[in-house]
Length: 396
Ligand SMILES: [Zn+2]
Ligand SMILES: [Zn+2]
Image (cartoon, rainbow, N blue to C red; front, side):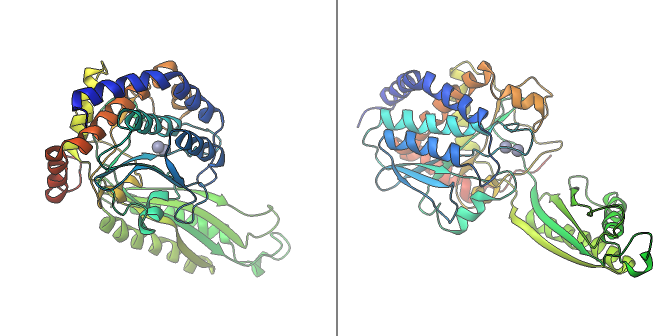
């Protein structure tokens, strides 16, 4: 088996070899944004790369057509790179998942080229539907992560930090059913599902000032009626309930449900409330693993910063994975400080030359860290020991 410094040098060389191809792939994915669970173009391109590099590709997995697993090597430890590749409605790759997918792929390819016969397994798990569908949770429940010893991914952001907290989230679909009638001729015959929906949102506004500071309640009306001269007999909203932990989310969901039930009662309508996707869990970052990635990032000239454990934050289905096995989800600066995610500016940043350069550095740092996990049992032990003893990250 080659020494670690030798493997690290080979990883660096491999990243240089694939640099142009990976930048082209990242820009190609960016130019073809696809919604959650509809990422056929991205999935095909990523799988084709894995097959060319000698990975055995299984697809679909977990009943998700755009999910896949690529495997190289045999036995434990098993180190997995997680790829996200879904985009957002109307604003495309404004979360920069083209960089997550290509950076993870580049890490796997360079590691596999540096270690053609790895002492363990190198997996690439394609995890579709991060923006609301919970692809990783579905894969977890289907056993896709069984036997994985550590999972590595990163997320684009406006600063390069090794970890941060994330809220747990429930994604609700709320439907009011009323009775249609002519809105002018016979309104007394109608029961107004839009009035119920408006009442529901007003009630949530009343609730909002009496919830923990770290919680968030927000949603949109996806169906508000058919025509102004028909009393709406059906309305629908999608609603997110976020709090520090899954338990706290479930408590808040009950209070949000009461707002909907009250609105239905007041308007003579009925309400149906369903979970539109699995609950996203709080996040337990593996600091040992993330710190190693950041050591290598700094050596490559990337400007790194201290972790941020305060302020508003999103949620991701990596949380559910991180409670089951050691996982990391560091952030990589691709846009000027203060650029919000899910914005037009962030989408443009995700195709900038600077973003591609940062992505390749992250790929190299993750590949070197994965090599350490495969070749240095004491490092893997330290990662596992932290996983056993540490809890999730919470804001300070
Ligand atoms: Zn996003
Ligand atoms: Zn994202």
